[in-house]
Image (cartoon, rainbow, N blue to C red):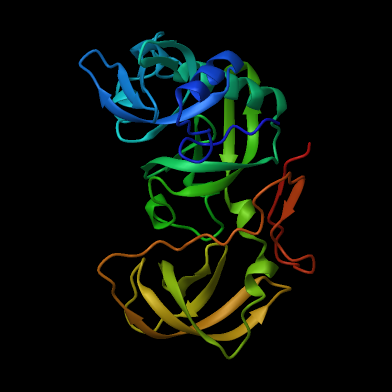
Length: 301
């Protein structure tokens, strides 16, 4: 599949008039930075050698039909935009971001399939999940339940706007031009995440859940253990924990909290990706010898 990457990652940045004219002839997608949105919601774009102009109806798919809100135009100011060069007029280039998006959307609908891994960039965060750019400003969604195996209370505990991540296609509706995404399958299996740890170690973690019988402590985004309750603990609190035991057959890690402390702002737990490209047919999180439960995702159906 042709590589249509998120805005800010990929498209060619041009620095000469000759290159821009060549892009107009070949239909190449270029990238600039939106400098201004005027009162009529047209965008002015810096292209290095020239200034570009994107009419309001050409800023994004769905603007002309009223399906895309104007906030999607206003919010581009100061950010990279992918576009096609329609023509050069004196010292200004007439551009279309919509055409670039339509080309990327067509390619994704034709060639992508569940299990394909894509680069993405976080564009917006809500309590229920994150919106991400999967190519030329095309936005798709990762629900909070698909972000990691370890449960979180808010996606901002994992991501920040502008962050480059990877996602995997979980499902598609070509007739509606919709792509559904997941993320947790790229963060490794239980065994892969547990491999660096062993009983007797004391390691840092984050409290992700507190119950009467103990606290669930995240050791990595795809690995948690159950710690004995010793004193009051709060969700989001950072702790140091002693590993009492690791049981692969039951997929359980027993912990004991050694110390707990507060931080003014909880820093993001950076993702450690085990997969960043290619295709996943089946993802089995549980160890093969696990007799308790099977956690898996089947993409090839």
